[in-house]
Length: 282
Ligand code: GUN
Image 1 (tube, rainbow, N blue to C red):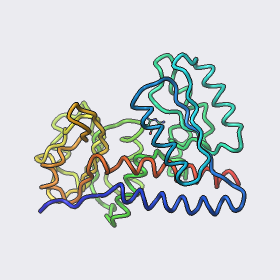
Image 2 (tube, rainbow, N blue to C red):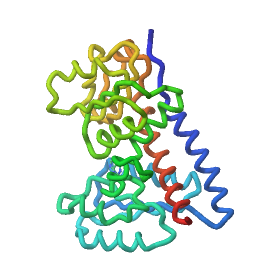
Image 3 (tube, protein in one colour):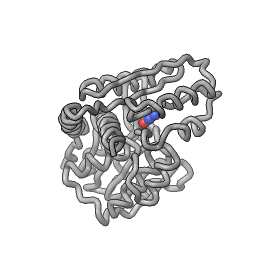
């Protein structure tokens, strides 16, 4: 039997409509959620991403600003910009697009953002709160994955979740979110020997390594839920970390690329910004 598709675009659309409705209500009490995206340099992929984020913000009625800084910007100058945004009450969310130019230390920059405005959930305070199980800003992509699974009524409790990838943006926060949903969690990575012996045990397999079509059909347990976080730009087009056409013949559920996890990331950024705006009033 062919796997059912997890339609991230559809789920994201529902979330965006919900955010737009709540934004309308907030505006009637004088609160307009605001997100400022900071882009340093002119990396073409980053430009596409921040353009999508800005458009999404405008569509739900947020105040949306894009600060495009030259690639020659120094770390001190960037920290100064962040300090100004931290102190601006009309800015509820600050997102510094990664990667930054090599001269700039991303950890110093992320730590400078007010944790309450850290809509990426990358600040060490938010990371710590996530691990400790304290409500906080949660990274958008793994949050979107959980939201998508829940919206399809997929029960997570007691499932063996195998995550391939240990990045700070996806793999690690994904593990903590799934633990909080009562999954048994295994994290695999580039140094894991015999990866397939782990992935074949997965009831829920999350691929987030950035290796085109790494996950082949023989690595998937029949009926498993397969979530593909990979976005790999090949000459032939966009492909995920999962060999979609083959895996869909084995899995129970699978996300397409594009149209799977990607749209959820932006939807959760909107939701995080809305949450930050609401909390700013408390
Ligand atoms: N670059 C690629 N993904 C992301 C993300 O989720 N947030 C930020 N700030 N930069 C990114």
